[in-house]
Image 1 (cartoon, rainbow, N blue to C red):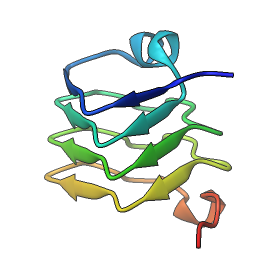
Image 2: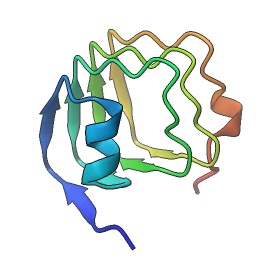
Image 3: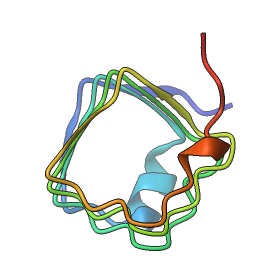
Length: 87
């Protein structure tokens, strides 16, 4: 089981770096990340911010997105209907 990565600020990290760090992120900030056509499936992001990122055509099947803020991000073709429902 991956541990949760909390309260970190990431700038321009690649998808590979993200996966190597873990799959659970809480209260993190992602800046200038280019994750075009990236598989973010089954990852968890809680209280995170995405700033100036490009997530176009990324796959988000069963991805948990809770209290997320997207600022100035490109997200064309992301199918948010596949995101894991959270209550």
